[in-house]
Length: 244
Image (cartoon, rainbow, N blue to C red; front, side, top):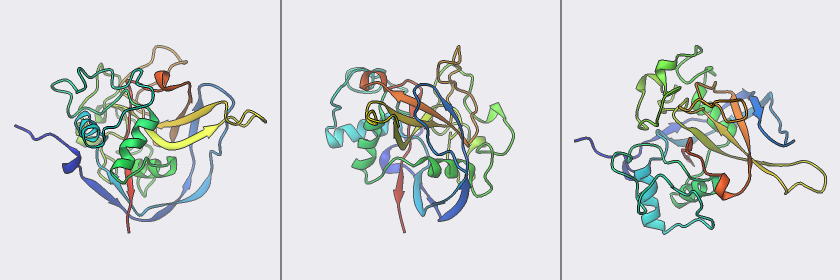
């Protein structure tokens, strides 16, 4: 029987220090929050990056260790039953968590969410590939246009140049970036987060967050409306950690 992937067995991949010209293609779904989209020279690393997205089993262990409870539990881990993931879900990426929930997990283990520039480099590698596996859109290399989540170690043929899994498809991933509306006097009224990577789900119309094989340099800016609305069934996360 295959062992569960757990936090204790989670592999961290070393990312050496490097600099690159950061550019991004963006989609704004709501509001008027604009950000610098490059090009700009950025430096990444050295870092340790999680090889896989955080799983249900890993998040469950975090809750057991920390006793973490969100201030507003609406929609929090709503796919679980009686406070635990269902059998067969242990190696699926944890979803139905907010950016704050993800940050709490990362901080408990001495890690953090990656910045946008870090995430893009983890996915594209030193050659700045369009997709984790190369420069062509190849649906067979990732979980896109499917019907459900897949295990975090699925699609080894689609890993990034650093060997990181599912950086395209399966679930969108939270980044550390958070922006606020720039309207004078209303800077704190509207909060926006940035997602990366696409998901398995194909949205029925343009208003929803599309899934599919999104390029490494594509991001989605999403308006945060409160915890009940900020937990999604197609968004997960992975963490990074500073290193020498």
